[in-house]
Amino acid sequence: MKPNFLTIVFLFLLSMPCLADSQVDDFFRSTGKINTVLGVVIILFAVLFIYLIRLDKKIEKLENQIKDE
Amino acid sequence: MKNSWWKILSIIITMGILIAGFLIPLKPGILKLSADSQRSAGLGETVELKATTYNTYLQSQDDTRAFLLLPDDRLLHAKSLTIRSEAEADMTFEIPSDIEIEQDKQLETNLVIDNGQDGFVHYDKAVMIRDTVVKQDIAGVYSELNSLNFNETFAFPFRPLLYETIRNQFFHVALWMAMFLLLLISCYHSIRYLIKKDLESDRKSCALTTVALVLGIAGILTGSMWAKYTWGAFWTNDVKLNMTAISLLIYFSYWVLRRSINDVDSRARLSGIFNIFAFVTLMILVMVVPRMSDSSLHPGNGGNPAFGSEDLDNTLRAVFYPAIIAYFLIGLWIAELLIRYDRVKERWFLGLSN
Amino acid sequence: MIQRIYHIIKRELTIEYRDSHSFLASLLYLIGITYVVYKVFGDLDSPAKVGLVLILLLYTVINIVGNSFSFQGQDRKVYHYTLYKPLEMLTAKFFFNLLKVVIALCILVGLVVILSNSPLKDAGLYFLTLILCATGLTAILTLVSSISSYTNNQGTLVHVMSIPLMIPILLISMRLSLIAERFIVDSATDNYLMMLIGVDVIFVALLYVFIPYTWKS
Image 1 (spheres, helix red, strand yellow):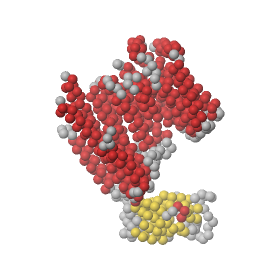
Image 2 (cartoon, one colour):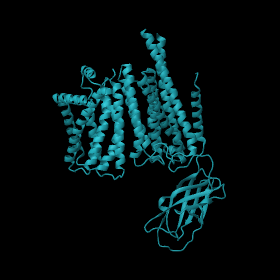
Image 3 (tube, helix red, strand yellow):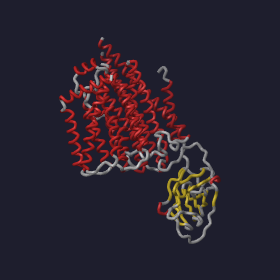
Image 4 (tube, helix red, strand yellow):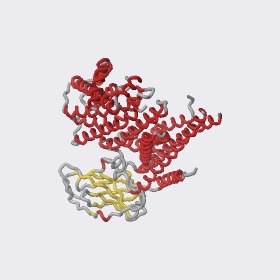
């Protein structure tokens, strides 16, 4: 399988915590830890949007199949 | 888009919880004190403390006071209090010589800082008082507890270690609750299928399970992110995290089961049975797992997995319940799309074969 | 009805006796894997031992019960279906499987005691826990194996579907057997036992409710 956009996004998401470990450690542990909340919200919406994009592609495929008839 | 008022509602509530979840401030609190080793004193000795507070107005209020709260509910006044900025204060306490301590025990006292605007903020186990030989007699100046100010503003509670991440209640814990609701409805449709043999119910139950899985994955990822920056590890022995993991395992196997049966009717029947079985197992887990683990990392979480009385106060509830509804409606929306997709596909297949 | 169930059990016993190699193979697998575990971990007398016993039990139960519906071919299934009611058939199968599992369980515990050279601290509680645990696992696996006998990749599906479902039972049994082996002190032993029995009852009840549905094809 060719690595597509989604895989790259997913890998990026996976590696984000490791990145945070080394360089921007203080970003997520800043006073009051508000940035951790931000990270959580971003992950939440990333997962939802990734799923929506997949669903969109699935529907597009079905549409094309029906059009071909 | 007929009959889709609930979709609009889900958008509005989601916007609302995002705005409220980020904009409602946190109550003031004490972030940190000077190192542990300097926070212990004998009778009649003097102890110096440097406190860093959060969301406070120490400087602009001129009635700021500092106390040590003794276990017998007396407030010991600070000997001196130097305020360096809105959120930094230095203070010294003279421990009175007439405090009674049991032999070889230490007395835990809490630091309390109080002013008219912030109300009182406290830091538990601030100074340990040792039992020592008294060198000089010092009498303490005390106040009563009811002299403290209360903060009545609408704000989220300040919890040590969690701080602002208490807002994750709306973006992580609510996700888990919404997933549970979706699975409940999915189970209902499975039972309906087994009674009425209506393939539409099977389609609904499958779509709802898929969406619940997506929410569960989001819950796992957000949970481990939160755990990392609060407790220092991506995976902890926490009740909710592990319960989500187990339910994901169960419903992934449901997914595998569906894909390994070709016949439509027996697929619907068998996966319906498994779905009900899985949901019952999940209910058992919700009752059993919290009692098996000795401690939970979520604050105030002893017996009841979701609503410990310490876990949620009214301010949090005001945003937490709408958040559950919002994720639940979004889940229903996506499930509806899946169901419509399936219907169109089936109609197309039937059209082809005719 | 009881007579008919007894009749099925007797028939199953005869069939089992005629090709007893499958049950014996399961026992051999159990003995082999127990021996390997003790060679790998060396002498242990720690909470890990209790956990290992449970995991060995889990795999033995999967091995014995997991393919209890698969060995009969399509013809035999139809034959049984015409001859007996599903509930009778199920009861017979369930008790027969339970009998086999309990035999395997005794062998397992005996082996563990001999190999680790430490007698059981509270044999009664320990056996009660393991038997209750085995009952629950057998119920789950009977249902799962009857579901998966309709699918095209049986072997993996039995494992994939049954293991997550077993977690609540394993958690309670783990706590109970830790208490029985005196690794932790807990006064709520009766509560845990009641919980385990309750969970068993729920699973067996579900099994009885749903088995007729799996048979309708």
